[in-house]
Amino acid sequence: MEKWFDSKLEKSNLRRHTIRRIEGGTALDFTNYFFRKLSITNWLIILNVVIYLFVIILIALGFNELTVLSFFALQANGFFSGAFWTLLSSMFTHIWLPHLFFNMISLFFIGNFLEKIIGRKRFLWFYIISGIFAGFFYVILSFYFGATELGAKIFVNPDAHSVGASGAIFGVAGLLSILTPMMKVYLIAGPMIAIIIQSFLSILFYNGTGSGIINFLVTFYIFFSIFSIFSLNPIIRRLSIPIRMPFWLLPLIAIIPLIIIGLFVQLPIGNTAHLGGLVAGLIYGQYLKKKYRKKINFISRYFQ
Image (tube, rainbow, N blue to C red; front, side):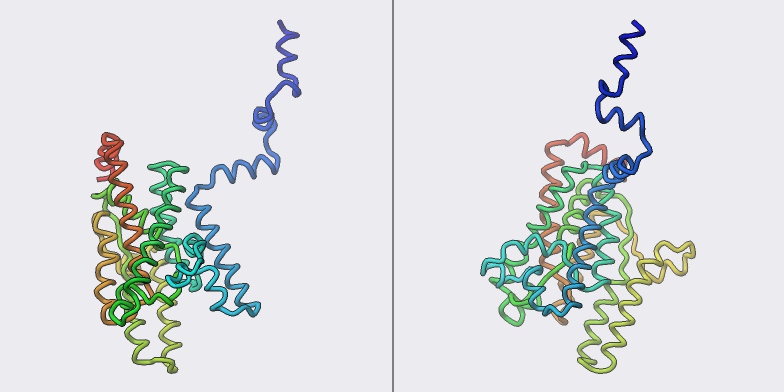
């Protein structure tokens, strides 16, 4: 019996994963543990940052910015001319650092939260599909309705380039508004208000000296407002203009006012892509609610 027991514990008879657990402590073990534990949301954030750096390096090396954008960014006319891959590439592309930063902060919080609820694989597929749906929603409206002056304000000119993870993030927000509608969250309104003010002032100081100062102040405030929400000082936190609301109201407040304001001033925000992502999230949320009614009701009550 003792001989049989010893032979079974010989290294050659142990499965590979068992040997790793017994020996432990190697660089390979730590790497496997790290990559296994990293959430899909955090992987998506890393991918967005890497592509941002890649695009900025290309432009810094002398590649024409419009050429780079035409390859990565989503454009209605370009899409219907055959650039179908931009539905996916535009989801992970950012040009403006505050845009990347604000999107990734939002994704970090609500993405990791949703991933814990619906699981890694389901979250990954949902995120990609909702982002693609948001992009398709955007190009359809832009291509058919964005050519006029009024249409460009609402649906974006079909020659304009669009980048960013916002569409997929609004998909996440839309799904959470179904799964956890009454959970209290804060909308950090400061950055959006700053961008709106910047758009109005840019009309007054178009290509003037004041334009550069305004852009710098807006960029500084966006970073400051995001970091201020982590401050222990309540006065500093208020500078980011946090608005407390139930989750179901969050995506509506983040879209509808911007659509209305966009009728009067051109905003650098793809509201139709946001709306498309929200629609994708609401549709999938209703599907989950119908298929897993008891689980969804439990989740809704738990986070009420």
